[in-house]
Amino acid sequence: MRKSIIVLISISILGIYILCGQEVRPRSVEVSVVAGPTLAWASPKNDGYDNRGVKIGGVYGLNVDVNLAKPLKNYYFHTGLNARHIRTELSFMDAYEDKDKASINAVYNIVYLSIPTAIKFKTDEFGRFVIFGIFGMDNSVCIDSKMKYKKIDYEKVDKEEDIYKNTFLLREALYVSLGFDFIIKNNTKATFALAFNNAFTPTYRKNYINLNTDQKVEDKSRMFEFQFGFVF
Image 1 (tube, rainbow, N blue to C red):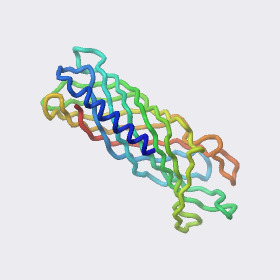
Image 2: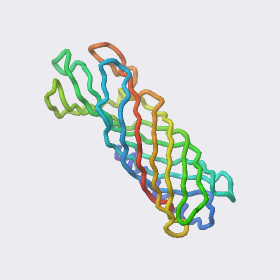
Image 3: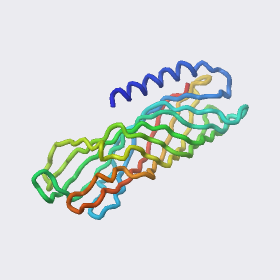
Image 4: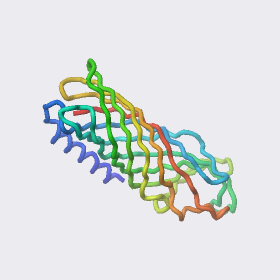
């Protein structure tokens, strides 16, 4: 996972270096570096599995907007490369070590590399502000997945388990965002956005089985994201 993050940071720096030199407005390509928290929750389908509320994760990376209608500056193809940490919590009954049946509370922490493919709409500038909306898909690949036990039969525990082999490799999600840019100077802008990210694909593979019921664990993740950053 560390190697993936280093690669992401390197690509971000290179992209900024190459593209921030464009001074013509509207530019053909805009590059932004963003980061922020995510508020995610699980949506389990199995009887006996309950979501235990919203968990805080994070997202950071490089976004790229390609102008689709120059000389206008209202329509863009939105893509990029982001790392997304999705944390959820579930309670359920399952076997645990020497116990055939135990009440379990567990936090799931899954890390994805994501490439959005979306259309971005921008207003014309009014004063120093530009409002934008994004609608499209978030296409992700799982690079790390762990489950941390919190409670077993209502007693606190501190044990972590690697469940990468039980986690579905790809995550496809609807991505909708609304935000605004604040023009600092020339082409440099601060950007702020609120996004909703809703998965279509299952979180886990068919081999992730509840040992009490012999059923495949079915779950999808949803989240709100707050993104802050700079456009160069």
